[in-house]
Length: 79
View (cartoon, rainbow, N blue to C red):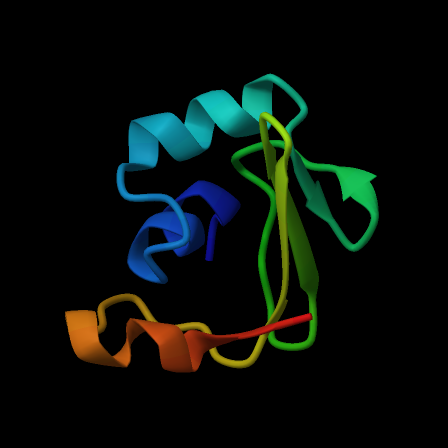
């Protein structure tokens, strides 16, 4: 699955366009490297998102095309 779509589906970022812009601005790291929005995400990857002075780091536990709002947090584990 594309990184920008995963960020939206998992609700780490609420809108796909915002996820796309964050990737374009170098604010998203996939396995420690700056990632493009089109990068493929798979189980076991680590994602680090920086917005201002906040940084969120998570491990990908599951990759699904769609998920209910209440189950979105089951797709990742905070580190």
